[in-house]
Image (cartoon, rainbow, N blue to C red; front, side, top):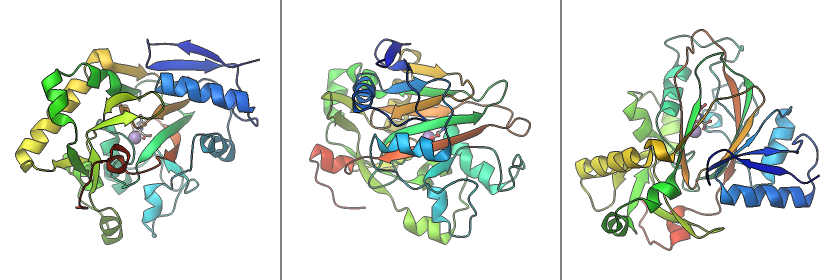
Length: 299
Ligand code: OGA
Ligand code: MN
């Protein structure tokens, strides 16, 4: 039986049925999933029972896997495999983190609009987030359609943005939450990287805004002008009509296209409820400036 694609918003989010991701996938099913992924940009696979390995195996169909940035800190012990980002509120002992823990402060930035790994020279292409435990209330994930947001820009603004390059850094988004407690190792391994603001998605030739709270400085602009423009564009792109809110069910796997979406986690009582999510992340094929043919000096 072929997969079933059930749109839940016109053109942005769809549920995928009649597929068991724990099993080896037929080439036709993989092709159909990819087609749906390029048409939509957020795919929800409800009710999947996946081991860590099965989760990673499915992600590998979309492209090469990234390593979690938590693995950069050589002293940090990881709760889960280094190829999976630990998007939980649990410490190494599987206990809910403490109010003043470093981990909690570091993860606060997931509440800001962003796209994954735009602070890496080779950013993420896709993220696959799997719900192993969810809180009874709160803890949703919101997604913004950056293609629709681009299409709705006034023409003169769209023209002005074309070819602009922003420097993205983890330190920028963390600074927005008041966090500056990076180790020397983390700081050195994550210098700012250039990314275009307008990109083209190769599979469908649609243009998209490419923004995140990781974006700090726009080349050729002052710091104040840069921040004002980034904040204005993020506000534009996250208007209600561009946003889908995912209310998690246990064992949902949600896959999104990091090239043309932003997302953020919503609030929940993280000192009371366990929320245990694992994210597999697939790398893009090149830095966005290279993909767009925009020449830049490295920062
Ligand atoms: C992520 C992320 C938000 C959430 O996994 O990349 O930003 O709702 N998650 O957990
Ligand atoms: Mn994220």
